[in-house]
Image 1 (cartoon, rainbow, N blue to C red):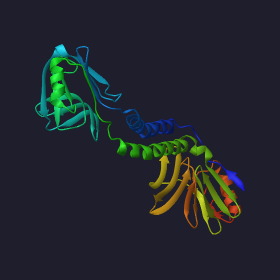
Image 2: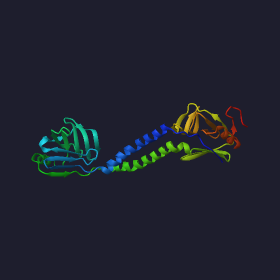
Image 3: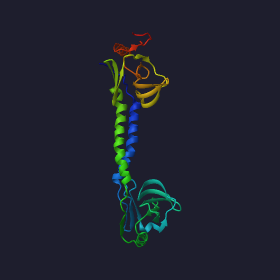
Image 4: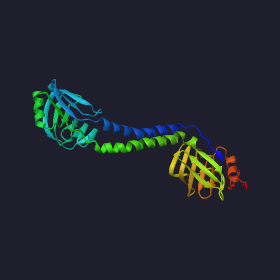
Length: 296
């Protein structure tokens, strides 16, 4: 079989797209995995004249307020809650939230509707929201400065764990496949002519087209509409529509292509159009030369 290759030219746009798609696919997945693997339990501790609240989330960390700076501690029913920037899972709410009557707060709680609100003169964290099991008991410990330590039950990460287990492999696979197509797809494309057929090979597949009864000619596509496949700069593969007809495109340069019409309609872009057309003619296709007349 005679092998023909399409022209391959470096493309900065393809490289940038590969990086962007990788970031879009992998960054959210990485954040999800970090939450699933890094999230631990919320804890409250009164010791050394200070209240320390640990969120159990590396993103939100912990907050420490001196008891001398505490101005008010009260049990409150939370209403109209809204997460502004934080983590909210079943039984776990940490980060910045907002509530009716309270405004903006920093909290590390079990998402209960009844909580302990701690106000302080600390500019960085003026309002803390906590949910120890014994609200009134912890309130009294704060007022008296009694050393106390409370750890909440671990958050329910079951749904997130399942999502991460499914999405992580898919995101990695999609990123590798798309990146490989963008960076290496054009150089792996081949057109093989022989045995009475044209065989197109791409990175992840191949297509064989019988040449008996087929017609081929030099062609410049107009108004190609992608139906399914890839339409990246310098790499076009898949099903398109042209002139109201389904057209399979396997090309790297749409300005210099060959149209083969037989059992199906295929557009390819061999580097040497004249030699390619001659090879198609030798395998049984009727061929028009680039300047028009038939080579039969």
